[in-house]
Image (cartoon, rainbow over all chains, first blue to last red; front, side, top):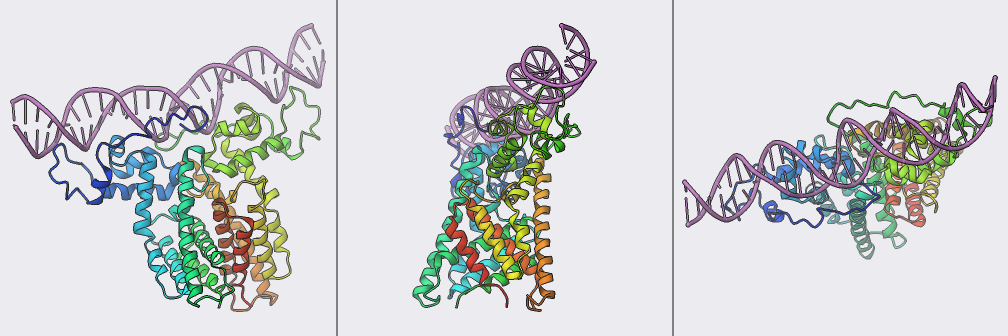
Length: 228
Length: 228
DNA sequence: TTATTTTTGTACCAGTCGTTATGAAACGTA
DNA sequence: TACGTTTCATAACGACTGGTACAAAAATAA
């Protein structure tokens, strides 16, 4: 099911039998206890974590259902019943990625000065990218940077999420200007784009095998551009 | 043919009937004139250019043979006879990309100062990324950043090519240090990585829809980090 | 003409893709 | 026990993947 013909999207409007959101929210269903029927044979949280790893490593398009079933330890029908389809599973993995991996961004935005925000953001990125247990690179970049028509919704989703992050950064820098933290001549939009570009560039370099020290060198140099 | 089973690589050791290199070197076979047999019904240069565009836009994995035949205006057997297989075609397209699109890099390295080298490199990248007729982003980045096992050789090839560019830049900066153009405290490796990271980051932002002016803003800011 | 060589179009290959139908298995409940 | 419900495993679906066999078509050489 790639491109040119009917694209009938057979399973798109399928409703998962069990409300995945609920089952996902509390691990192993603490509140909806004692449902009748055969119990789940796996931990949805761990399965989702495994799926995230695969997507992170191979990208959306490069990940096959067989990769997912192998990594998650369950078979296809369990995936579809619990998470929807491949696209829905990726989005849930992406949510998990944002919550668990890039939570330092929210913390960084609380730093008192614009420069401290930028520094903490970039150092946090270097940390994430060089964490030994993690795949190389950033899911928000390499999940679907260029792809076929089939994966295009995912590509657009990642673009939107990157844009959201950049907007939050720009707004933080606008506040910094109001607070006198940034010179009047500084352009918050340019600064936000610059910081994002450096982080995305670090992601590409990480995917190419850059070490923690090398990434830190990029961070140090990029902070020398800071105004004021 | 994706991953888990035999991976028999049926056509890998196939030898193209006609020496593709020769036919490619001179457009429409000026030197090897008057070969007998039915003449080629298409221009290999134009076909390769069309293939390059598709790979550039959709990445290696996202590009199907049907995409290529449609864009190149020829059918599969002609592709295989002229260029080899999909992987060989991508490599030829990548060569063309390097020669025609990123030739400004060689020019940039000839600039008299390290800063001028960096500036010309990044401005040239902004030009390339915002050239109206071109796909968004950079083929060397989004051709195969994260992918399945099948595309892994291409991913590694891109990593190697990016590393080659970074090494050339580092060597240029080392020369600049010898020439007194860069302070003794400057680290050529860090500087090269920094410039590459900014350019790769611009590529990601371009893929997300960044305009020429926005990319130029990134270039201007990143040059403020320059030592000396 | 006939023979030889090369390209073209068609139709196909085995394998994989994402997705699902089906029925057995495993639970709580009556 | 039997029932209702839910999950599990198997096996299949149609569509598409990269790659090819084959013969007709189009050129040169004899």
